[in-house]
Length: 248
Image (cartoon, rainbow, N blue to C red; front, top):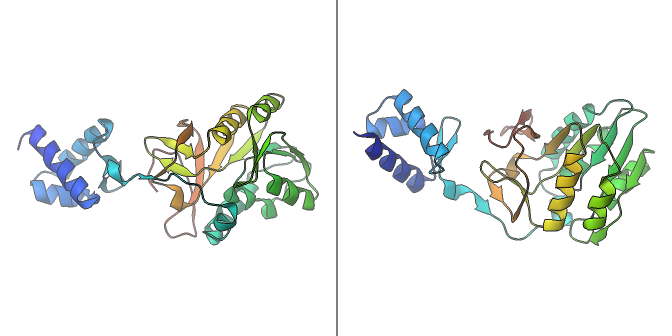
């Protein structure tokens, strides 16, 4: 079978099944696993399919989400996973760190686990600011327009004020993570704040449970390959560190 014929057959198989294992493609085409792996890598680079661990998935599998959930709903979802992620993230905060905390329930989940002393925090989240204050942490809340749905302060004034800071560490939330479109959020004003805050951090992490992968929202706020994600494995009880192009 010619290479072009293999490519066409592989794309059809992936799109028909949504996702498929490398060995299944090999059996169907009567080609070696090494050949199929090379084909999948090339098709991925051409944006025809998505190469995943052990196989491939359709680029149609990225789920576009147009509406953001209310914060009250988010707080009730994936609680155990967020605790695992939050506990690990909090362990990265060291004495004398100056930390930026983005809005979001995954970021908020790290607050109960903070042990480091002599730390200071900046956030654009009213809720996170309150919880830090309850733990007697020094916290600055950014100015801006209040967004009711997420409890975030956003806008041009927020971005401008961020220019004053140089953070040793930052933790960020995201609504979706996609292998091609990277980190996305529904609101352009929140995206602007996230991007600006990221640019002020010496080191930064995105905190996201496994449900965020494969979802796409309207605005990409970062496509930085070096921006690490702290997430949970599919078994839920194990932390993994990865970038947005790697599969869980």
